[in-house]
Image (cartoon, rainbow, N blue to C red; front, side):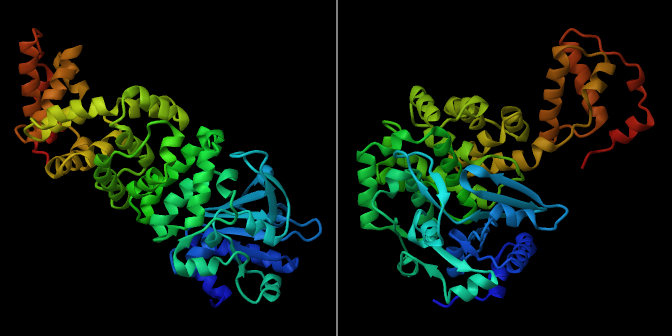
Amino acid sequence: MRRPSLAEVLKHLPDAARALVSDILSAADERKLRVYLVGGPVRDLLMNRVVRDVDLIVERLGDIDAAVLAGVLDRAELKVTTHDRFGTVTLRAGDAEVDLATVRSEAYAHDGALPSVAPGTLEEDLRRRDFTVNAMALPLSAVARSSHAGIVDVENGLVDLEEKRLRILHRRSFHDDPTRALRAARLAPRLGFSLTRDSRSALRNALRDGAFGRVSGDRLRREIVKLFDDASLGPDPSRALRLLDDWHVLGVLEPGLSLDRAQVAPLRRLGKCVVDAPWPAPRWKPWVSGLMIWMAPLPPAQRRRVLQRFAVRGDQARLIIDHPKRRDAWLRVLKRARGRGAIDATLVGSDEESLHALYAQVEGPLRRRIARYASEDRARRLPVSGTDLLELGLSGPTVGKALLRIRTAYLDGTLRTHAEALALAREIGSRSGGTPRRGSHSRPSKAGKARNRPVR
C-alpha cells in the first residue's frame, strides 16, 4: 500500500489539530527526531475514513523524549498535561488536542493489571498494542520518513486491513488486557470487521482463566461509555452488546448479565438519537440512557450489582435503577394524555438521560409527542410569573397549583394572554378559599397591557 505524503496526512487530520501537528514536526525536524502517526489514526487514514484523534509517538534521542519535545513548542495558548506513569503527554491548544508519547515497552504484573511501562523501541511499542490494524506507524518527521520507505507494519496489519479482520498480536493479549474484548466489540461493527478465529479462541481462554475478574469497575465503565459514544460514528450500540453477549463476555462481567433481544430496537433508536438529535441536548450522557434501556429487564437487585461492577455510583446509578418504575408510571399517564399541556405536566423536570431513554423505548406517535415537548414546549415561557400571582394575593401551594393549570391551558391553546392567565388564577384562588386582590391588576400597567397581547 502506498505511503501517503505528508501533505495528504495533514489534510486528513482534524482541522483544529493540523497547525499544532505542523509545529510539533517542525520542532522535531530541528532536533532530528523520528515522529510517527500511530494506531487508530493510521488505520482510519488508510481506510479513507475521517481521522478524529491524533496519536503521535517519538523515538527517544539522547535525553530528548515526548515531554521534552512538548516543552520546546512556542505556543502561548498551549496546555501540556504529562502522564508520567504511561510516558505520554497531552497537548491542547484551543480546540486542538494531540497525544504524544515516547516509544515504550510494557509488562503486566498479572492478568487484567494496568501495564508497567519502560523505554522501548518502535517495534516494541507497536507490538504492545491491541490489534494488528492498530499496530502500524506512519513516518511524519523528515528523519522518520528517510528511515522508513513505507508504513511501519510489524505484524501484517495491512493484510488484515485488506481482509477486514481484527486479530490480536499474541495469544495472551486478552489475558493482559481483557478490556480489549470490549474494544473489539466496538471496532468490529464500526469498521465492518470480524474477530479472527484464533482471536476468539484466545478470548475464550481468557474468560475460562478468570482474567476479567481482575479488571477494575472504572476501566469497564470507561469502555461502556465509549461503546455508547461510538454511536456518533455510525454503529448501533446494540451490535457491540450483542457481540459481547455472543462471546459470553457479559455473563462473565456479572453473572446473569446478557442482552435481552427486546432491548435491541430501543438501543438502535438511542444510537440514532446520538447521530441525529431529535431535540437540542448538548450535555446529555448517552451511556446513562443506554444503561437505562439495557438494564431495564433485570430485577432491581441485579441492576444494582451490575452498576456496582461497572463502578456507576450516585445520582447516575439511582436514575438507572429507578428508570423502569419511572418509565412505566410515565407511560400510564402519557397513553391517556390529551393535549400538549398534559404531556408537559407529566414530563416536567425529567432529566435528559431519562427522557432520551423513554423516547427510544416508545412507539412512533408517543415519540413525536415527547420530541415536541422536549424541543418546543418545555422551554416556552408563560404569560405570567409566580410574582404576578403573589401580587394578585395568591399564596403557598395555591401559587404552584395555579401556575400548573395556567401552563396546561397555555400549551393547549385555550389561554393565550396575560389577562386570561390572571383571570384563571383568580378563579383558582377563589376556589381554594383565598381572596385574590384586584389592586393594580384590575387596571393593567403599560407593561401589563403589552403582556395582554396574544403570545405567538
